[in-house]
Amino acid sequence: MKKDKEKIIKNKTLISVIVIAKNEEEVIGECLESVEWADEVVILDTGSIDKTTEVAEKYGAKVYKYEGPKEIDYSAWRNFALKKITGNWVLYLDADERVTSLLREEILIKVKEQENKRTGEVGFAIPRRNIRLGKEMRFGGWWPDYVLRLIKKDKLVKWEGKLHEQPQIEGRVGKLEESLIHYSHRGSFEHKLSNTIQWSGLEAEMLFKANHPPMNTKRFFGAMGREFYKRMIKLQAWRDGTEGVLEAIYQVFSVFITYARLWEMQNFVKSEKFKAKNL
Image: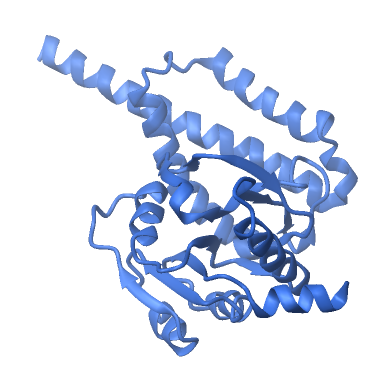
């Protein structure tokens, strides 16, 4: 069995890795070290002002600058980077994710197996081990946290969604057993808050454009209450100890910020209409 695995690994088909990055000089090196086995690594830089690109080039990655709109749009970034690769399979990673040796082996085996079949899976969802606040989370909805990241290039139609993006694929999707390691938010509340401020604005904007009903006290408490129940009670976040409880409460706070910013947008429009009518 071991010889069969070694043979498959040795004769692997072309696999490209894509990493979308911005100001990730502190973490991208370890990410790239974990995929040194790949045939090609492409970095799409979306506006770094640190040494992200220099670190990436040091590891032999092909670096491209995104020249499109400055706004956050993960689907646009992933679609753009897809055009730059030469492999027939693509593995998408974030800079704070790591591929373990066991996952590497499983990826190589699965890809080779599918290449030898006329039909079969054309994409694979990978479970993620989320490290949040310095601890691996097993409850609260953080495990197994499957993400569809390994895809046959000619079966990937496109990515859709600015923030919570999803790939549109022609064919069947399977699941891998081995997991990615995800060092989410670097374990720091400062980093978490920075991301929340950025992402909540985009989420609020999408809700606003979708004509979300006007936010009021009842809707605020309803949204936060549902999130608390889901994380803490239904998904048992408390079983991850203090870190699990803090993370669950933070998710409630994140929901609050998103809807507070939506309220702000809705009331700005209301205020402008009032001014236009009365001034």
